[in-house]
Image (cartoon, rainbow, N blue to C red; front, side, top):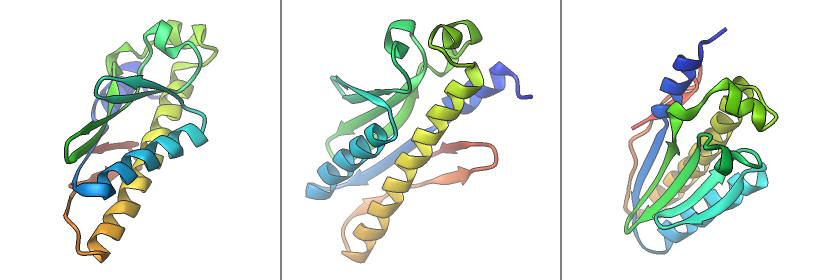
Length: 144
């Protein structure tokens, strides 16, 4: 069994960043919102973009969650509060810490799939796309 500290460290390493221009940037952003809400994440508007909570009360309990930011030509995904993952708070939300971690990981992977689809479309359209992505699916995290 993996320790809670290792899960926190893995969450802290999840980052997806893309530099994309024009209408494609808005489309990528909206597609990520659609993908995450489709798999059950609860969206909440934030100044920099959106927060996506993996379960009800995650915001009130201060649990880790996915953030999506749109900064001009940059679309970014990261985990807010990765070190706030703990067993007691997760249990208050009706999950184990491992289940919460897995839900967040599933969301990050689905977002990465959206990023990859847009990367392929943009390259095919000879558009501008800069996205460095290194994946380690066996360890369950992405980092840039």
